[in-house]
Image (cartoon, rainbow, N blue to C red; front, side):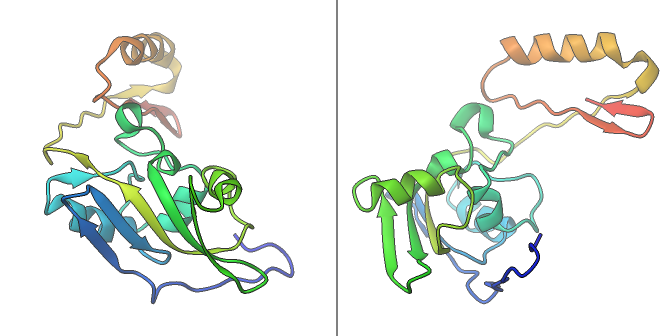
Length: 175
């Protein structure tokens, strides 16, 4: 993940998550993992679009766009960020939002990294009941074409709350 002659910063000590349930906002430090965000927001019946694996870093996922179980209903992770705290290469500490440093805010919402070090994210939170149903259907790869067409058609017409995944694992497609 680190390019030749690149610099890696370890933000694990910046792993805090603060929830403002009244405003439906989460302030998430740059080194936090998704599990910390999920645990803190679920206590209030709230969630935001994040990844599917609890030990993924919020920063890397969000700066790369970020897609999770709530994406069909609430957009990508980067769509749910309302502000970033960023330390620039010049050492400036900026608060980027739609109203403050809007070009930097736009760039960070899906433009990837390399605009500075994001030390905190502010996310919009959405009411979520906390109950889910999941189904995995394994199909032999040789027989998967009709099942995948049906999966595609189902996802086109399904409610926005439904999220669909497809995974090829060796000679099996898992829908």
